[in-house]
Image 1 (cartoon, one colour):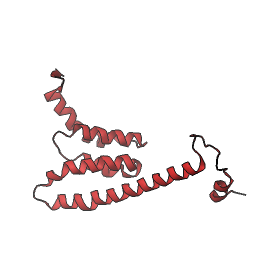
Image 2 (cartoon, rainbow, N blue to C red):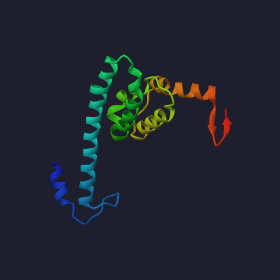
Image 3 (cartoon, one colour):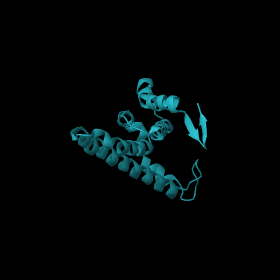
Image 4 (cartoon, rainbow, N blue to C red):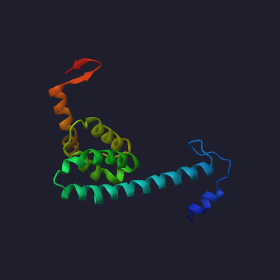
Length: 146
C-alpha cells in the first residue's frame, strides 16, 4: 500500500529536523516561498513575452526595449530557469551595447538552475561580448588587458 503525502506530513513530528536542518513548519514555509517564486516567474514570463516583446515588434525603434528585456530575462532565469530557458536565450540573443555582464549573469543563472545550455544558442548569446572584448580589451583599474 502506498502512503499519501498528507499522511507523510502528519507522521512527521513537529520538532524533527529534515536533512537540511529545517523543522516541518520551516520546510512548509520554504516550499510556499518556492511556489510563490514560481508564480512570480510565470507572471514575469507573461509580461516579457506577451507585453514587451509584442511592443518591441510594433515599435519603429525596437532596440530600445532590449536592455529592459534582458534584465527581466535574467530575473526569470533566476526564478524559473529550467522552464524558461528558451525565452531567456531568445531575449539574450537580441542585439545590445554594453550588456556583456547581463548576458553572462543570465547564462550563469540558467546553469545554476540545472539547465543544459545548447551550444549554438549559447554562442549566439555570448559571441557579441567575446568579439567586443577582443577588439577593445578589458579595462580594469586603469590597466588594459587583452
